[in-house]
Length: 149
Image (tube, rainbow, N blue to C red; front, top):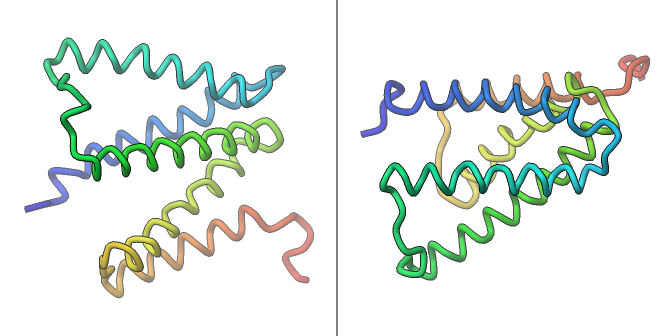
């Protein structure tokens, strides 16, 4: 059974690291092509995760995984790569305090995709939260001086 005590601390840590990612990336993309910055970041992640997986004894032969698993991990990797390329480009062009919240529109999209594709059914309370998140993101994205238009 999934309880908040199982996943919530990890989700909070993920949010903290994601926030730091935006700040560090904003500084890191100054004066460098964002695609090159994304490549460097990806290589560094590999260089950190590969030894971590090996030394913690979690390595297993990926070729033994089902084709279904490999297909969806590949699709996830492609989506992640595309997201990172777009995110770094946005950070280079905009303020981190605006880009990061708009990037979190993914929260709303995950809820919608999970509803449509996975059959997940948020509660009415959760739909209200999703609507509030959407509204907050719109406020971040709406150009200044056009709020009354």
